[in-house]
Length: 492
Image (cartoon, rainbow, N blue to C red; front, side):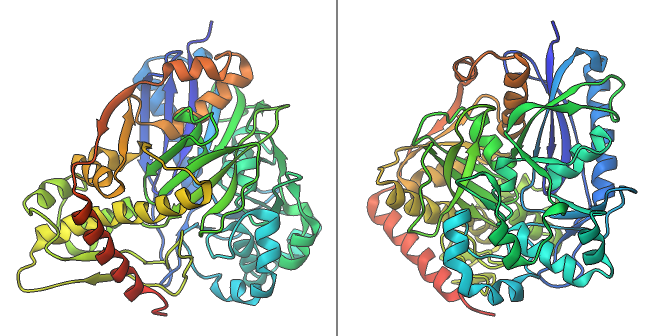
């Protein structure tokens, strides 16, 4: 009996490999950060070759830490930063350009030219017209990289998000994706779960460059490189859908929020496609092979944990990210300061690409502790914006929020989150829910776990925060936040 499922978690700032046992415990893991490339204001890129090299390194390091051979691994699952776009040569394996990251705003002009198609795009894909998604990024690359369009039309140049890129390299040339990643391209029809010819024509993208769309849980092939033995690759989920699955949000109306580079709240809507009227997007939550897809409503916040890195690296307010809590706790409150981190516009529920970052409410009284507190509170306030939209769209009075991701280590943030939402915030025992979700779909495909019921039994609560704030104070703080957001809109 093989003891482990491996999960490759290819994120926005780093790549890691984690081994999980039958009880969903982490047996070993290793993580390596990659470079963030900023060629111009609003442009964000990654080097796909660096990420592939890091993937091989983290696999090797994790196996060494676990002191096991890879013949103990039953299957591999992959989860990834979504929307980040790579185009590479099918024959040589070399990228034509750096990966364009989901946060990148260079496609703003392309999006503006598509405004008359917005309702059609939204109806077919569930997505608002925004620089966030892969389709406009593919179009930009085809228009701006010399010779690329010709290579795409001949079938030499192929596209993928990071899941496709990693799997192509691991398998020696299998070109696939899953429904969750495909649903973030602005090219897949939510009803048919296939590439949509009308959308491809609108964006002028050749169909032959796109990967085959598969379910999230099936055996796609075996590893040819990266491991000594051939191991089945049997799970793919975009990172936020992976966290939904890892949190075992299998019932309709289950909600989770992930605090990472950005911040992402998903609500399971079952087999029903629910179109948002309040600035959320509709996405595929997951699909098990031979089963109907499960859909979700999603609220996406572009800047959360990355704001802490930004304040660390550009202002030396702190030396290490975890120090933000200690600094913030020296202030009793935010001193009237609000930080709207609209560095690449504002995502849900505003979808305002012209918004820019704002620090507002400064007085002589304010010091760096107040600013640190405002940095943390920005994530909680943005989550409240999404939470409000989700309650309106679903008609639910949501009283519990399952949370995960690196920022849940901040007790101050989690307590403030419970306070500003007036809801219970619940952290599970295994905080690595994104990687765990990828492990779960991979494990289900090979029989390592028998059913989703078994997975739910593995979920355990670690900590719970309940609201302690008065209604008056909550309303006042949130009212000031909304004023701050209004000041940031349409700056560009």
